[in-house]
Length: 235
Image 1 (cartoon, rainbow, N blue to C red):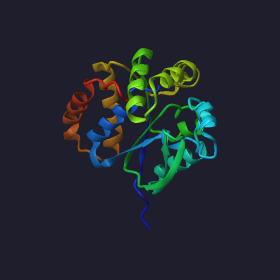
Image 2 (image 1 turned 135 degrees about the horizontal axis):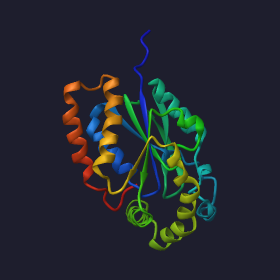
Image 3 (image 1 turned 45 degrees about the horizontal axis):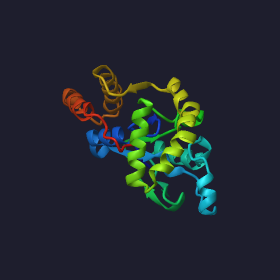
Image 4 (image 1 turned 90 degrees about the vertical axis):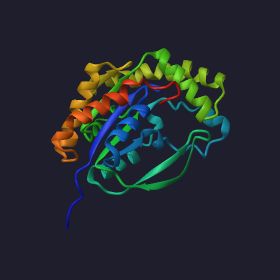
C-alpha cells in the first residue's frame, strides 16, 4: 500500500494583530494548491455550557484556553497526510459550531498565539516563524478587526486589551521568540524577506514541489506579495 507523501508544517506565531493571518494568506497564494492554512483559534475550548456572564469573565488570552489535545492530534494527522477533523469556533458566542473534515496539503501553515510553547507541538514543525510588531500597531489592528468581524464594542475591546491581551502577550507570547527559526519584524525589510524566501524554498524544493529554474520567479513573487504591509484589521 502506498503511503501518503510527507507534509511539511510551518508555524507562524505572534501577538494578536501581528499579521499572522495576513502573512499566511499571502504565502498560500504564492504556493497555490500545494499549501493549506490552519488556525489555532479554531481550538478554543467550547464554553457553551457557561452563562453569558460567565463566558465574559473567562480569560481567553492564556494558553489554557486552547484544547491542546485536539490541536496536537490534528497536527499529527497532518504530518502523516491523513484527513482530520477541525472544530469550528464562534467568537461571538465562545462556543463550537460542530466540526469539519480537512485534508492536509503538502505544506500546511499553522498560525496562532502560542504554538511554540508546548515542546511536543514545537517538534512537529519544519519551520517556525515569529512575527514581531509594535504594541500600538497590534492593538490598532485588534480594535479594527474585533469591531468589524466579531461585533464587540470599542469599550469592551479596549478593556480586554488593557487587562488581558497586553499582560498575557508579555507573559506567554513574547518569550516564544527564542524558539523561532525566523523572527520577522514589521515593517518587513529585504533581509528578513530574503531569509524567509530561502527557508521556504529549501522546504518546497526539497519536497520536489517546484523546479530549480522557478527560484527567481518564486523570490520575485514573494517580495511583491509581502512588501505591501498588512492592513489595519488583520490577525
